[in-house]
Image 1 (tube, rainbow, N blue to C red):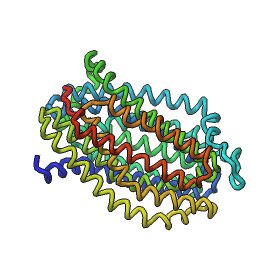
Image 2: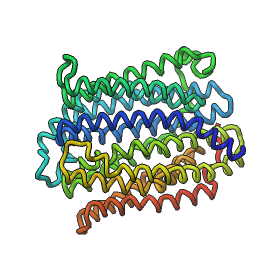
Image 3: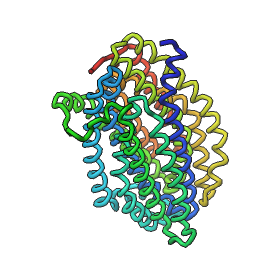
Image 4: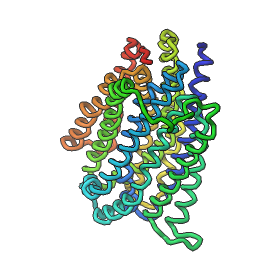
Length: 453
């Protein structure tokens, strides 16, 4: 492939994902601002529950991605039956994970939320924060199953080069979510003022709508979507393929779960300094999520393009394409990071919280903006390695690095140094540079170049 065609192929998949994720995160930012208007305790309680859901969401992402490695290669090979089998595997897996996640959140919400509320504070009431967090958790758990089903459908459509329908469904859902948030949080137009429970209910309704749109569109277009024909007529997956997906996909699922868990433990370490850090990190991550869609979406494009090349047996093309795609992602994020740095001093002022929380949030956003090219490089190399099914390598490269290097560093810096929390956060983020060097070495070596279907 020519370089121009290569970028075009990746962007064809990435741009709809960017648009969908950008709108989702912008609306999430608006939702966060609405909850932030209720008070610091409400905002902190909701952010803690969302941090727990972050672990669940990434575990789900890992589960569909494991099967998705095969889905992209089957599609590149022109094997519709193979794509159909991988989708069925996803459907069973996400259903089981959603039921498990909802059960854990329902039964253990008190100790899970309380785990984050141990830092010193003079301005936040931990008991009140716990109460708001539990109110939000009991409603939001209903949204897990429709979210899981939507992930199974959306990921398969993207692997087949249909990235626009998930984008459209996502846009409709986030617009609806924003409108319902305004109505239900603040009790407008005669509706009850529900506060954090209103925010959760709005998300539940929006996710059911998003899932319904995507399912309806998929089964209305079976003429162009070969895998959707007879999808539920014979619900079986060959044992050999199940074994392959388990071998390749299980490390990926565990990796995503452990990586997200490591990130939450690092947040808990930071919060041991003071509870206000949870609120400031919530503001910072809300902004970061909006800008991070650039390299996250492009990495999805990288994985699918390389997976299709590998599935078609074009190994040399894939090997030459990888460094070009990584470089494109890094350069793109230099400019995105500059824009993010510009808003770092403005955004926290929109929140109804203390000046101390706003100041910390500003510093965290600025550091994240400066590190964005590094995040981009690490993320792109991870998806290159994953495209060839080297999930054990990605497991060592990603989650093991977090638990062996990042988490201990955060714990030691917080508990055994007098450094300020901003400097500690900066040092922990810069560890990603080490990960980049490891990832680039593995990509150059070509350990990921592999056809599995």
